[in-house]
Image (tube, rainbow, N blue to C red; front, top):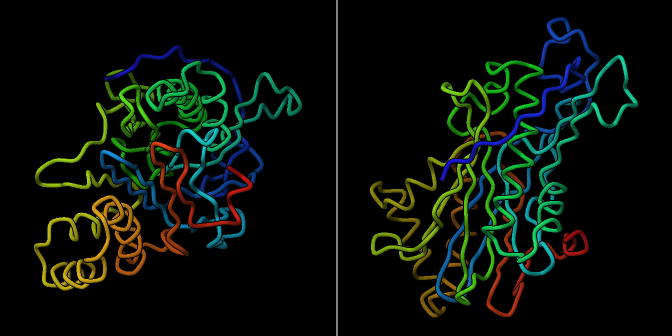
Length: 296
């Protein structure tokens, strides 16, 4: 389902991250963060799991931090995960204190805003509202720096500038999860978004494993079980979870896919601890990073 959104036109001078040339945009740089990440979701009839790595890069200092809290609980009812550009600011240099003329983007804060705005608090409703907010923000960034630089910031993939996942318990009482893809549309010459029909298991993929991020090659390799490395790793993992229930295996598989991506991808933007959050019919069942729970 593709959405068309009203775009907000703002004449601005950019204050943005150091990945941009200040001579080209005639602006002072501001601190922001890169969006390298691996995001994995699995789902069964009883629970849904969102897992991510913990690394984030400060684009002003060039330093990495491996303790970011990327996964967020929304009211104890939904899980939010995000891969892509997590933070940026666009400010009118002539009127730096004019809040109305500025765009301040923070993916987690926007997810909270979307959740509070909707009435039914379902994953799909929150995803739709988030898509409206995020599409406007990303298109304002596109207007400020141009599509070429925006695509470069997102890793060079115009069809996947960023990705968000909202997971929750649906009206049927079963878990559901929806992915939102943000992309540059050549037809519209603007940023657009698309919400998938839902992440679901299949005969070929009983855990419904969905992956997004700056590198998903290892996830794809492990899911396919077509290489010697994948076969060996999967065999060992299956032995280690043999005594677990199907639902537990699904959750552990999401976490293990993130761990394999951290171990083997070679992507410097993916690293740190594999974090995860599990949502069951009774609410948030588990969050790996206990220190992040106070920020949910």
